[in-house]
Image (cartoon, rainbow, N blue to C red; front, side):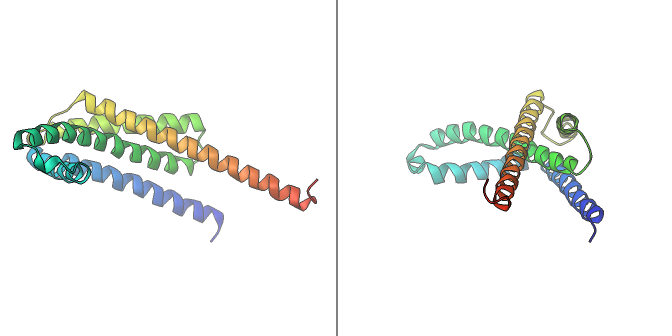
Length: 176
């Protein structure tokens, strides 16, 4: 397979991953509040009972208080994580195009911000849910962290490749 075809295939797969991840975000946002709370509460309860052995000995009111506070963190963490992943996928997809790094970063953050806004607008049509500016800020923070980590990983990967190339060149020269 020639190099152009390989790049096109990689580009297609990466953009498909972006679209599928956006679809996952959309489908989770389409859950009515009752279902969304039930799902996240179940995850939260599993995590709390796994990490806090004394949880079962607490009163029901104490358990509910803990679950409520932890569930809020889990839900907001899920927001940040989903946009962290989205940004890394977008950065990877844009890397297959001939776009300057600064423009790639700007496009990634802009796309994630616009999708976060559209996601909150979408939630305004879902029973029991509504748009929250704080969620857009959390999503954008997650996207920024994802893009930054992608840039760092890409920089380190390229640096490692340069070092290997340099070391290989020294070996070919007889170590001088």
